[in-house]
Length: 117
Image: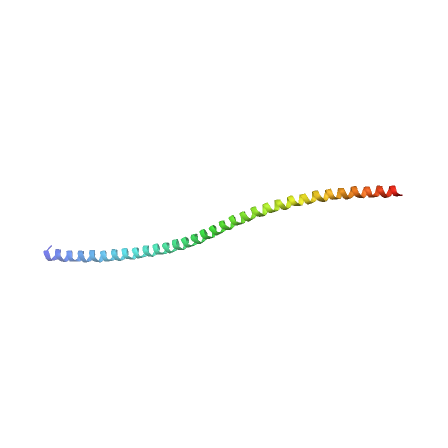
């Protein structure tokens, strides 16, 4: 083998390696671009999820405030209801006492009228 043959073989091998390197680099660039696109897509989805969770968190906070407000109002209504029931019980006792007094008076009037005759 002559030095020219070796040089030509070296040139051919260098060209093959260079072409192979270009193919490998192109494949790496395409893979990198694909991975970047996937990560961009994942980041967009995570951003969307974060926004939804923020909205849910705001709603939960609002709902929690509503529940606290309702609880406070229900406590006030319960106290008011207890007062009404107590007053109602008092009214019923007064009415029963009045009815007994009326019955007593009616019986007395009936006795007095019977004595008059």
